[in-house]
Length: 78
Image (tube, rainbow, N blue to C red; front, side, top):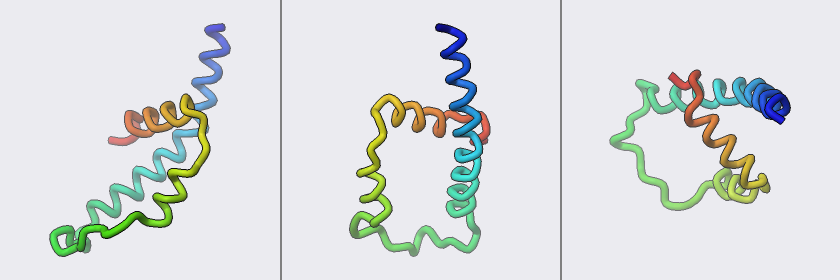
């Protein structure tokens, strides 16, 4: 079973890593943009349509946890 687990992890990493790299770059670029005035930006007053849709994505709980953990602790996030 260890071989299957290793293959599963390898495939998962190869699938997820390019997506994590793109998302991290976009987030960092937006957050660190020197043109962005975070002090004057109004606070959100509601939930965006994107957040509402994201809550309804039906991922199995083990996959959801695995994806979030991989994205948060990726060695390519630095």
